[in-house]
Length: 78
Image: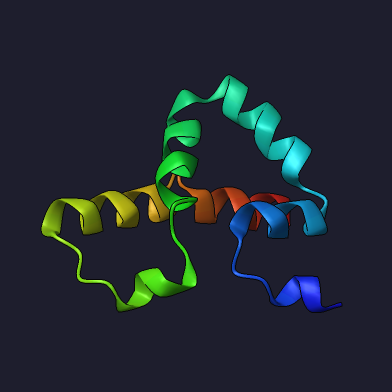
């Protein structure tokens, strides 16, 4: 039960049972793979970090892009 309280995104995908689907979709969608590469670098300490404009925009785009973003993908598969 305590594993679900993790902030490790890769672990949470496994617990949700959607990690294989993400791996398959990233093979078919390089932009999603790139977005995951950016978003997966986030951790609980990141929220306290100062981010430059480029890094912040990269994270926002990786998470929120309508077609290739991590959040729209999660909404579709979870």
